[in-house]
Length: 427
Image 1 (cartoon, rainbow, N blue to C red):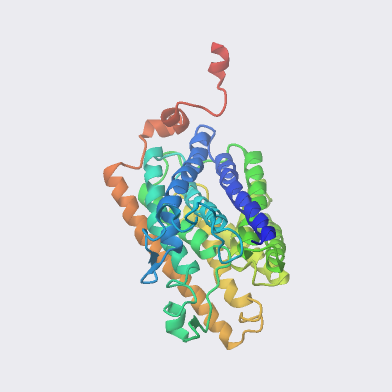
Image 2 (cartoon, one colour):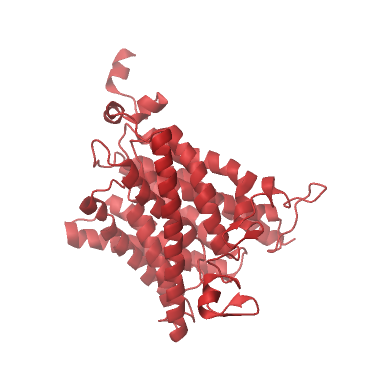
């Protein structure tokens, strides 16, 4: 067993898991103070539901024996069968450390992917409906897309993938290899698409829009997301090696320049640079570099991160133009920056991109990057719409209007995040 790599991957698991409570802080600060607990509970609830389902059938659907290149057989590794041997000892996986560590790492990705979606639903939905949606969505969208992209499925470089069908294969692998280094497609595009669908199905808040109630909390959440993202991207090298180091460096650069580019957009467009813009720019840069973190040079990472900040800064304004209540900017920051980063792989992947030595082959890479992004969007949109409409007709999504005005922390959870003036008086 490679104990060094095992240690690094366990650290990476912990870093990615930290991203979910960090997201709870980020989203909680952007909400009204009467809804902050509910917003944070949606992230915590996602961690609960997804953890259980991942052990039961999530790992199996994501990385089990393939059915048609679309999903893994849910029963092939149900309950993590095959992760331990008959004596109950961990089996060593293909990366040279116990397979259970790979399971743990992928589990944390599934959790944060679901939690991201909650940002489109702030302050107006039933917690019970969200919990059911989380379980359905991760099963029908996230697990299959992870299989298609990362487990020799339809959107990978496998012999029977779209890439092989379009550009041929050799020795069982596609001649043009799609790249999603750490989840631009699997995580951010699928979650961002689901957020857009839910914002349209659920509708606007009764008192939309609102200002964030606690910007220091937003900035703290963003800084912890940045910290956790090192596990997300550098951990996706699956070893403590040079690719992990490159991904770490590119992650830092993209986050820094993403923040700077967002602030520049604000300065020239609005006349001032904001703390909310700084925090959002960090996340946009991180999202943009995720699919490319280990395959581009640091200079290319600067360009990708800057593009992510600009695309997201302008993209968050689409909700006002088209009147959909993407409460906490999931579509602009995750879907649009994720799309940009996925396409930028075709431009900048070292030795393979159009602008980085790939020549005509780079055009093929750009095309296949666009196709896997579109297929993932379509898969997420169709299933998210079906789940959302079914839950709307059965459980119902919305709390009543009075609950929205009063704040759903009190009406749904019988709690408040902050002591109110009459509470002090009564004591």
